[in-house]
Image (cartoon, helix red, strand yellow):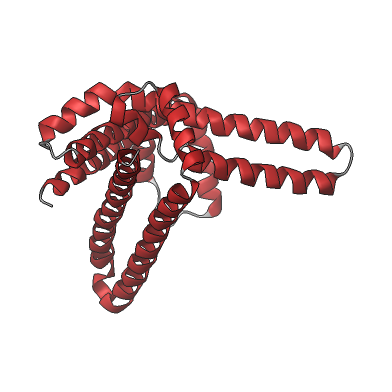
Length: 267
């Protein structure tokens, strides 16, 4: 159980890095000085003028800052997943799990995880493009029919991809598979173990939703009862919720890997 605490490390480090990246992006784009010089209660006209002036003077930096932040956050998020999944493999294999091990796994699997995330995105994008083409073709015949059929196709393909890709990371980490082989293995696993994958996905989604709703209710009640200390309570509760949601994410990842290991171990 003590080893499981190390699983919080990648997410916490990632959170701090992304905050730093956000601050750097805001500084680079020049938004921070604008906010500091903004009137306490600007009118709609003043706000519109501030936005127009800012875009005229800083549009290039704004676009560059957004793109840089998105790219850096994507890489940091991928490194977080690479390290965390490596630690999960260590724990399930009853081996040492430490910050040094996390760094080793993160460095070794970073670009594999980046490639996997891009591949998954392209699969969803391809599905959306095909759905759009079908809608355009069917719209010439009957628009209502086109909408219904397209929505059914989108729903079906999205669910199929979600479930088919669900075990892609356990498959990749178990035998150090290339991205393409890991995706194929994940889909084969889903086809052969549909009930197992659906139940696993449902348990993780339900747990996440319930805990999130519970903390939302607790936060609203805490703020309502705290009076003048509402801001402080909100900050504290936000941090507690952050840790709770990281914990839920760790549970989901650990449970997914464990289910994959268990099912594979029986065959």
